Length: 159
Image (tube, rainbow, N blue to C red; front, side, top):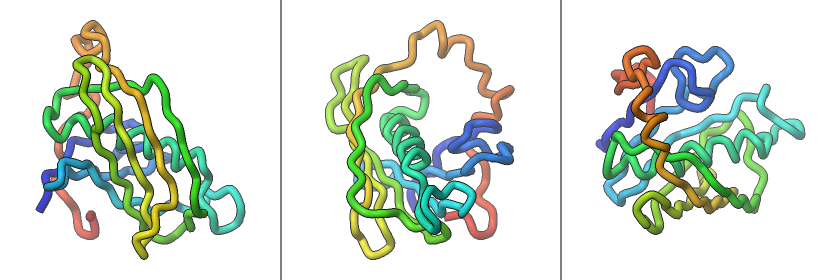
């Protein structure tokens, strides 16, 4: 089984205590990517039964930032630029896979790519991003315990 990445308490994407959040669990995969399973709830739709593109962009932003954590779990990135291509509608209430990887590591700046993949293997959304390491003064003030930043045990039904 792939390695489980940390979650936090309040992050919109990964915060396990955020009542409005997505509560995604990210896993490092053997191919060097990070992956998560997402089922977009109906209250995050745009057209009936279709996931809102902003939610999908948010998830891809998080996944690309977490891709560097496959090699270094304490490497925190922020997005400088992101480009999205929506190829297919993503249905709500059906699981899809989110995957991202680092394509080029240039020290403090990295290039990453990500995808939302439908259950039949179709790539529905693609993203490319330019990311940078978080400034050291921001990371130095990060209180992992207060933020609940840790690997939480999987519960029944977690992928």
